Amino acid sequence: MELVTFQPIGGRCFDEWSMRTVDLYDLPGDKRALMAAKYGGKDGVIAIPEDQYLVHAFLLDAKFVCSSTPWKLTDGTDASALSAERSSR
Image 1: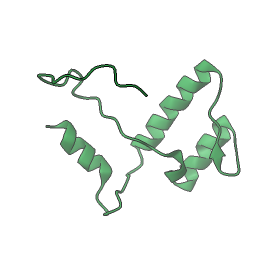
Image 2: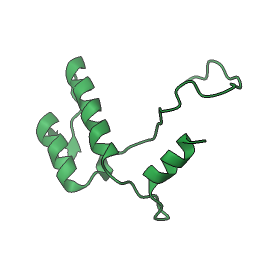
Image 3: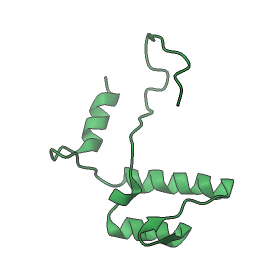
């Protein structure tokens, strides 16, 4: 990764966008099984498709599955509430 530019901005251009790292290993068993059944997998590892259209479908499914999962931080805080709080700033 290479930083191309850095400059202060007056405000966010995409207020409703939020980003976070999601590890599919952390999904509950039923949701992991769903993704593995749809896209394949072996030994608990969900396969990421190579076909560009399936990759898009995979990302949309991952977004839906992960958005509907309440993530907890190590201190027990609900990460989705924290994300919503940050977005409102």
